[in-house]
Every structure is written in structure tokens, then in C-alpha cells.
Image (tube, rainbow, N blue to C red; front, side):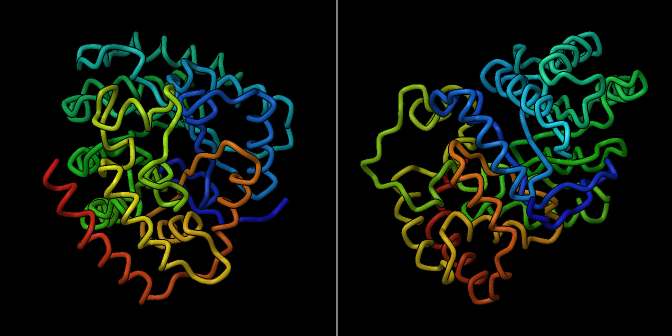
Length: 330
């Protein structure tokens, strides 16, 4: 196995690889993936030094969790920290975020993953008011006391939600969208997380594949792929698809981003390297649907740091091409 840089995931006290493995794709929400292929992706990630898997109870209605559980049962030698999420299986009403539901959701995830204690459970982009509720955090503390979960965290849509969560002493980490097309968390969220000792998990790191540079304005995705059915937030938050950037705008900006790629790197690896370099980031969780993608993503951790000139060029690209379009919509 390749040894990858490890960073402490906030208040969990556990070290995880700077490049993790996102597993939304393995649930089938990006198109069907055979279980053997999913095992191949996870195996390639582990062999490449990944020690962190991120999943959720709604990815494929639990299929992603189940695949991870079966994989880790077959690979007892794999030292992997698994973060899952809860809350999106119920109607998004604050009154559903109560202890009895938490216990029920946890029981299902523990069964899916084949464990007694979940390493980390994240509230899965709940209504904003949930993140300000003392009763919610009391319930999460109860889950820790009952040894159902080792630690808890939140996954959020907005910077304001992230800052609310960071202020809570029991929150171990915050998961938020961060990539060269989504720079807003750099201003306040990451500095606040560093000061509080809270981990940052960067999701949607390639803007749903835009930053891979592989797409054109004419690219067509499968009907069951969220990049087809959620471009305007029809099914869930629009920011989860192409980071909320208009597809045509994103394709054009991605072509320009490709021109910033250093020698011996790909656009996707460059985007991941950019995220890894941001002060306060613990781990970035790209997804993969093939062994080659998993290995290429992991290898971004070994790239030399991007130069200040490249960092400045990314900021300039964002300011010129992305900021106005996204801010006008949001």
C-alpha cells in the first residue's frame, strides 16, 4: 500500500488521509455500478493510501453503506475510518430531528455497515434551524453516550450553517462544498474551523466532474444521473450539482482551468491539489466509478504544491467567470 499524508479529523482525534473516497457514485445515483466494480474502486483507493470513506444512508437507499460494509468485512486488514450521514430519509422538517429518529437511522446504518459503533455520523444538510437547536445536540450527545456513534458532525450547504455548527463544542467536523469554482468557504469558514479545532471535509471537489475537463456543452448524462435531473435544484440543493454553476458556464470555465494545469498532472488532480493546500482542510472526498479514477484521485496527494502564481490564477478565474453568475442566482 502507498502511504499518504494523514491529518487529524477535528475533534474525532482520528487521523485520515488527505484524499478520501466519496461513495455517492457507488449507490447508483450517478448511473448503475456493479458491486464487483464498486469493490474494485474501494480496493484501488485503499491500495493508494486512502484511509477515509464518506457515505450516507440515502446513497442508493443504503446500498453505498452496504457495499462498504461488505468490502471491509472482506478486507479486515484495511484501516479505514468511515463517515456516514443521516437525516435525508425523512421529510425535511425540524421536528423530525429527534432522538428516536436518530436511533432508528443509526440502527439502520450500523446494520448496513456491519458495525456496533459508527465512526462518525453527520447530519445530512438539515434545515438551518436544526443546526441552532440545543435539543438536537443533546440528542447527538446521547448517541455518543449510548455508544452508537463515536463522534458527530454536520454536512452543510451554506457558510452561515457551517459557522453555526463550528460554534458547537461537540461538533467534530464540517463537510462543505469547496473547489476552484466554490471559494466562499475560504473567507470565514476555514479560519473559524482552524481556530475551533474542527475538521473540514471538502465535498463536490470536481464540481460534479466539470473540473475534470472532460465535458463539453453537448455532453449528455444518463437519465438517472443527478447531473441530468437536478441541474436547477429539482430534487435537492442545486449546489450539489455542478456546484450550482450553470453547465455551459462551467464547461467554458473548466476549459480555462485546464490551461492552469502543471506538467504531469490532470485537471482533476490539480483541482484536488488546490483543495488540499487550503489551510484548514482535513480531507477532500472525490468520487470514482472506476479503478483508474480512484487511483488518479489518490495520486493528487503526492503532487508538488501549486505555485502562488497558479493559486492567484485560480482566484482570478473564479472572480471573472464564476462569482457573478453564481452570486446572481444565490
